[in-house]
Length: 110
Length: 77
Image 1 (tube, chains in turn yellow, orange):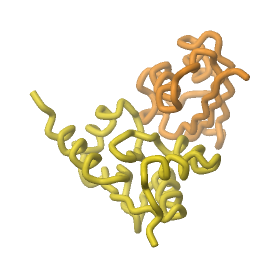
Image 2 (cartoon, helix red, strand yellow):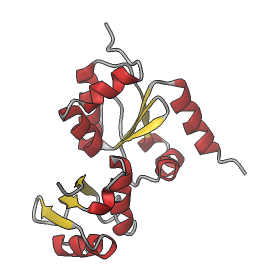
Image 3 (spheres, chains in turn red, yellow):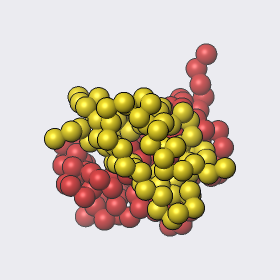
Image 4 (cartoon, one colour):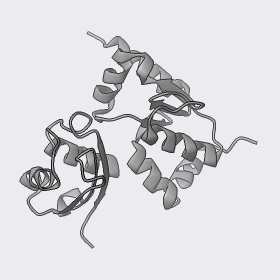
């Protein structure tokens, strides 16, 4: 029995290079951890999609099961779960994030 | 009832007996913790897997009573 929420998530992360499941949106993050990841992505000036889990309870719970990760935000790059706020912040700080973007062919926007 | 630093440390050590665990209660009221866990059992695992091991040790409390836990994991030098 396929899980419609999982299918939706899978489709999103397959059709967008970078997808951020967060609380709030790019303009109005509604949680410090989500805001931190938005700031990091904006800093690297890469294109990304966001999904506001606060507007969709089934997504809010579904994404945690999908990735086996208990918290929001969750960042996906080229369909792969990269981590939450801690991991993204650590990777951004030590240069791993930009190296990862380059390794999967993600360029900053002009 | 909010968790305390020692309780978090014990739960992690129960699953990762060799781990060195430091847990700080950032605001002193049990609302926000920072933890650094060093364990040889993280060898060969990426960060997501390492964090998932710690979350499993915390038996589903992360995201529930344990709303804000900023986590750092590493293998022994």
